[in-house]
Length: 83
Length: 140
Image: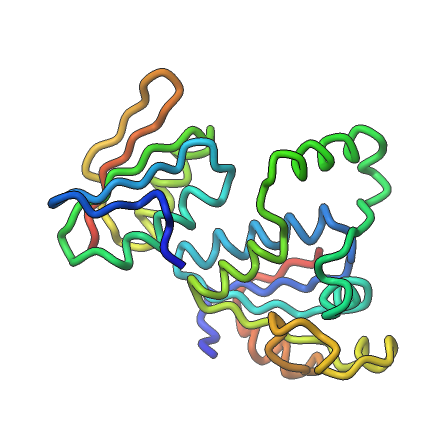
């Protein structure tokens, strides 16, 4: 299944996971990152309040690096690099 | 199937929607993290995986009460993904093996062709423990 929100635009792929509840942000992220080349970047937007802890855990567990992360107006943003 | 310590085993006993939903969320999360999941279906959970019932309405656990029912009604109205869809997604994403308990199959007079294709096979407790290995186990 290809997440409909993911569009390949140049180097960094975007994934809009806003409004999705746990565990869908990391499920969509895991699905999408599989379609990237090693080293390619994925930018994810999420509103699930567990996102910060979940993305940190997902990164540790899968070895895909969190390049940057932040939050603005209740939207979490993560830039991930495919292992 | 790998029996590494990373694997998680879930024994699903309850056939209520809230517990199946919780199990589906745990399964999808594990699959996203690359951890294999073994699911063993017993009793009323197995009944919920019947081909003719899997898309039907299910009760909630007694502790849900009126407030819980209201929360689930709101969730359905929002179009939030149902437990069986979350499990299908988890199976596409990772290593998720779903087995029916042979004793429960017998108790409920079921054959495998009466079960949803989400169910990979039928096994007994010995096979379940062997596949679970040293990994964590949850009873839901």
